[in-house]
Image (tube, rainbow, N blue to C red):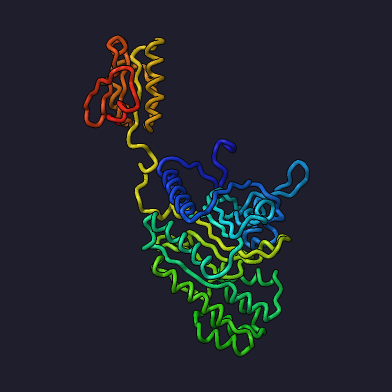
Length: 422
């Protein structure tokens, strides 16, 4: 029945799948904070024009766009970088630079659902605004590498690097406008390079592009020099990036035919690949003109976004128990009168105080031996028993369900007495 199932391309997350996603989030946030990035949360709904300007051909065509009750054209965010730039312009322009921000959130694209591609998915990313040059580019790449190192994947991933500035320079030499540049980059990104070359077959940059697509660095430089549009500096900078990052992300390489479809990139671009999936699992780059495009003062910026759902697909660690406390207590009230209830509530508070996951048993049976198998299946490690005998004797019984050891703790209990058991 429509309305009683998930919307196509959306998912309910729970169990191991949610554990993996939450684990990735924790690793990401820990590393972002270690590098001095501050967390920011942004609205899911933005004005459509924010993304129309520079998000790129493919993304604009797959956006969820709608009119609100006042007739304003809004969109569910298809990515988060434009929202970061918007909030920078609104709130952070006068802060000392660079500004380091990190985010985690859902994004929405109306793509055809398939393996690794959903209409709602999660991105975890960082943006450094207000700094340009080698050290800022290397910082975000090192942070990216550290995240995948902590995830146990750094030896498996491949970091693909290029410099979109190479293509921007060639397109500008040919006098190609921004809209046409965007379309050409879209074709190249979608591996439709023959189509891109066909559109430029009568241009002076045709030969240079053909050599770039084939990965012929020296030939590409030679051809660009012939037309007075040298790309040697851009390529040298890209090689310098590779030289400095490959010790931290071992399987890093330059692909001169690689571009990213987002229309705002101006310099270094990169993507993370994993051999077990046919798509990238993270990506980013430098976008020095986007702040200016939105009407503010020219401000350089660089960042990346991790595809959390895609990274989850390649995560090899067993994280089924990483997000759970090792000790979980269930409190069984054998009778429910004021004395036992009050004692149970006090113990529940104390258990929470010492960091133990705990709650009351809501089962009706008073046969403790019959309940224990169920408690074990539900993941409880300890059983706290409170009945008339315990209340009158001034103690509570605690059973370790794993070792079968039993303890009698005198009332009043303290956090210290509980810590000796849990």
